[in-house]
Length: 127
Length: 127
DNA sequence: AGAGCATATACGTGTCAAGGCATATAAAGA
DNA sequence: TCTTTATATGCCTTGACACGTATATGCTCT
Image (cartoon, rainbow over all chains, first blue to last red; front, side):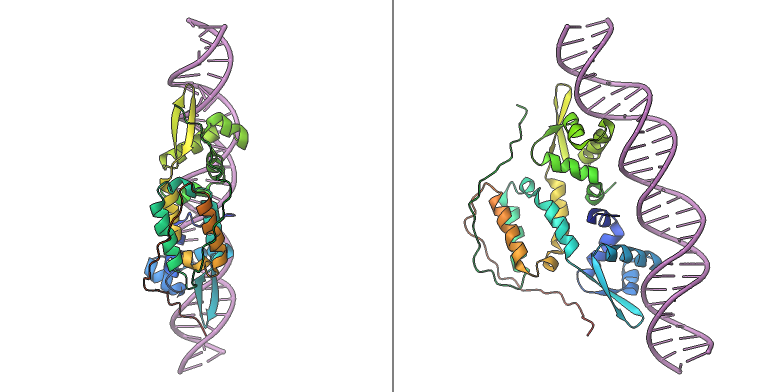
């Protein structure tokens, strides 16, 4: 269970992450909303915690779990290599960027622009 | 092996995808570069093909495999829900965006800007 | 202190997938 | 046609992991 990819391969873990994106939750709340047994939830949370996807704070008997960003960045970094493939039309990408800008509190001022070499990959097409 | 996440959970499959990002490759080429046995490569390629990550064309006895974009989009769509979490500081994001712009042949002209409601999620912090 | 609630862990079991080895299929070239 | 090369597939073993049940730990309140 080394990589972040193995962590998010599990549907129940993705469901848990999906819950936590709206707000932090206790084990019991997760258990009820996702209809999973308590030990199952605890085990998945353990995996998620050890992988850095979540952290917990103690609230009396409860433990409140919330998301942590790092592993998501890692997935995104991997994905970045492949972006050019699905951004053949830029429109989807455009929306994507806008959504990102919109969802951040900070004001964008200027967008830097670099004119690096346009290293397009050569895929030898079979004619 | 339903979801795209299970597909990319396998390190060897990610390695194969990593190879194909530069250009299409035959099974034998992948086999040699990644030091995997031929059946292993073929099996992984089958999984990747059935999941829509790659497609192949016949070149005499060889089969040339290349990437397909759709499943990557799917991963990205999932990831999108979590973006706000790791884009707390914009700087990493900034670099990220620049990299994307740089790597696309199309010229960006104007960046659309929308002023939607800044729906920040409420995570009830434990005081 | 004792009862009750919330969460974590231990153990046993079943499932599934990855890899090795052997073999099948198929095209190319002599 | 026979051999060689390229790829796919079948069978088998092994290991990892997800889940259930039972139990342990730890906190709260009376």
